[in-house]
Image (tube, rainbow, N blue to C red; front, side, top):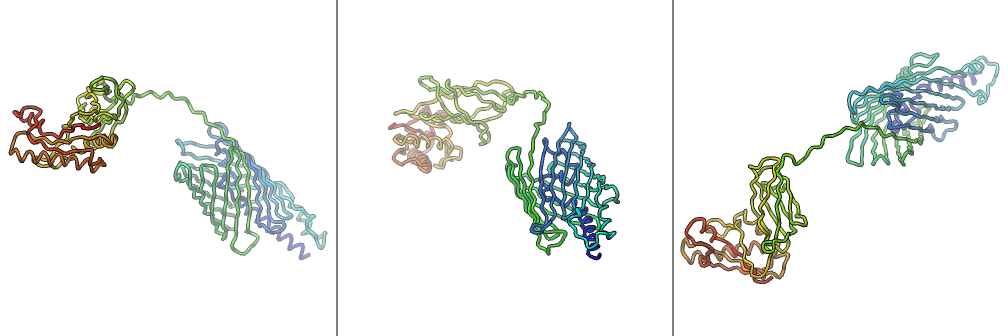
Length: 504
């Protein structure tokens, strides 16, 4: 008699534990929140069908096993439907539960909303008495155990609040069960997606579960997802458990696995656990209303600059590169077409124009568009391109020095950088670099200054990689004016550095 009573008391306690662990029968709730919250029914992009096998207390005979089949899907724009059937086997006890779920989502704005969910169904409780060998089959306590076999009505409810990358779940899985009082059992789950980059997402989560008799558990997890193809999750539970889960997605097929390792003494509440879930996820593309976006011309408020790059002598088109700068910042880089034409759109402003083409002298000058109207067209009279050849003599107005010194001004160095590229492109070219002055001052001093300035240019070009044998520095002082030294403007022209191509 005592043995029978002890067995029945154990079964009664087991049943209480079974109810308390109703929400504990899944560890893959982050992979499929519908397992613990009816409000998550339809919180997917299309129909979702899954099978889940949960094996608790690994290594124990007659250990609890739960097999779950479920399907849920969004319907219309703000509702979801679901069905879940699970078979909970605990030694001689069996709970078969079937639930229909309905959710309704209130959308406050894009990516912000609140979903309400309920589930209604049945639970069939069964004791397989052939698994018990009574000392006295006529004992009333043994006979009363047969009354355990019954089918009850069950109902639950839940909430799901989502705010951009954050989701909050609250659910009462056994809010009502026919023949019993209100079950003080609930789940609280919070998750947040951190998008680390285009491929990796980190999702920390916290789950708090409370059961009758003031039993409470907390899970803390961190999930790393790669490109929505593979994920891994690690966590801890307050019953001194470690949780590890992985998942892989192949198209519509998804496979997830979870293992729970318990470090405390094994008891009837916890032990090492395996869970595997296979799911088919069908995603429906949401139809978006076609909105005609008015076409905006990005160049409407700009000036259209049209320039021709042509050879100075032949007038043939030249293929070259043109760079537009504003305050040393590049605002446009382009090349001429087959006809040597360049079309540029730029804001009305003052620009520096740099034109280069292999085999030709570089062009560097200013372009003032500050007074041009927005949306207007401006034909830019670009200087013709001068072809490199033996005997060519050329100079640049922007190569200047400090007054009465051989120190190059900073603005001179950019054009000299372009000249250095000519020497690098043509290793056999040899040029005379000649310094010239006006007729103001002592003749010998002017001759010395012109030589020093020619040497300063040569030294700068050498610092850019030009070979010494490609250049010959020569100072001429005032002896070779190009215009009469009768006005300040003419004297400015005579103060120059001139290049003469000796070999090409």
